[in-house]
Image (cartoon, rainbow, N blue to C red):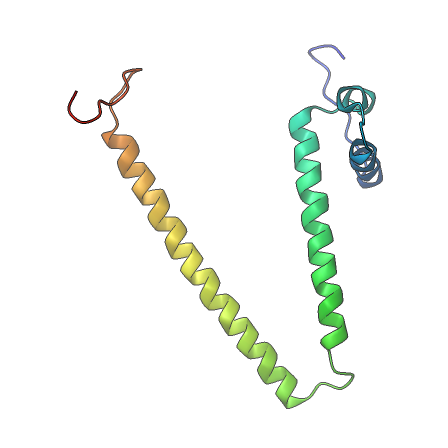
Length: 123
């Protein structure tokens, strides 16, 4: 592939085939990547997507079995309680993430510029 050519886009099925090919024992990863015209970071992204989608599908499958055949007020209340818990958890995670980002920005401003590493114990 020349420098000015963009890598071809793979269909979802081709990406899944790539994923399966690379999962085989002693799979020649480099050769497989060349065959599909894909780089290692793209493979890692495909792996993350496939694995998270599989986990989500398995979780959803478990939830389907718990659903009552008829929607009852109790079930609606249970779902509302679960939603409230998840909303609260998401809000807490958002706050924690914001605080970490702020801490990182402050820390990056206070770091010395250049390649000099900070001294320890005043030495």
